[in-house]
Amino acid sequence: MNTFRRITTSAAALLAVLGCSNGSAHTPAIDESVAGRLVGTWDITFVLERPLSLSTDTRKLPRSVAGTVALLERGAEPLSFEQMSAPTHMGVFHVDLGALGFPPSDAGVPDLVARVASSQRGNSMQERDSVYIVLNPETPRYAVRLSGRFDANDASGTWIAESFLGGGGTFVMRRR
Image (cartoon, rainbow, N blue to C red; front, top):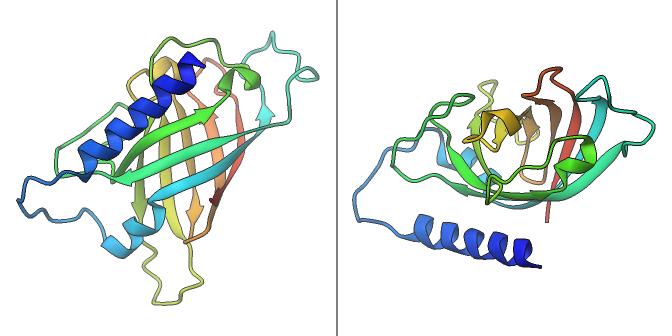
C-alpha cells in the first residue's frame, strides 16, 4: 500500500506543479488541439511478443499486462532525455513491468515522457496522429519505448525494452 500512496502523492504533486503558471506566454511545440487529445488518464495493455532475456521461459510469462497511464501537457521548461528530446507531455504510469520479465526497479515514482506529431494529410477527423512514449526516461536501463498512432479515444502501436535483447510487443491504450 505504501507504493500506491507514493504514486498517488507523486501524481498529485505533478498535477499541481504543471497546473501552475508563471504568467509568461509560451509557444506550443505542436498544434494544441493535437496535444490536448493525449492529455488525461488512459488504460494501457502491453502484449508480450518477444521476451527480454534468453533465460525467460515465455510459457510462464503472461501474454499481456494491463495498467494505467496519466498524461499532462509539458510546461515551457526545456526537457531532454537520452531516448527523447523535447517531449510534449509528461506523466506517471502504474504497470507491473515485472510480470513481463523486467528486473525489479527501485527508481522511485514510475514516470514517463511523451511526444505527439500531427498528421499532415488534411483535416479529416478520422486520421490518427503519431505518439511516442518513454517509460522510465531517467533510468535508461529500465526504459521502455512505445511508438504508435492515436486519436481522441485510443492509441496502439509497438513497444520495445531498452534491455540487452530489446524484448517487446504491442500496446493498446484506451481513454478512461
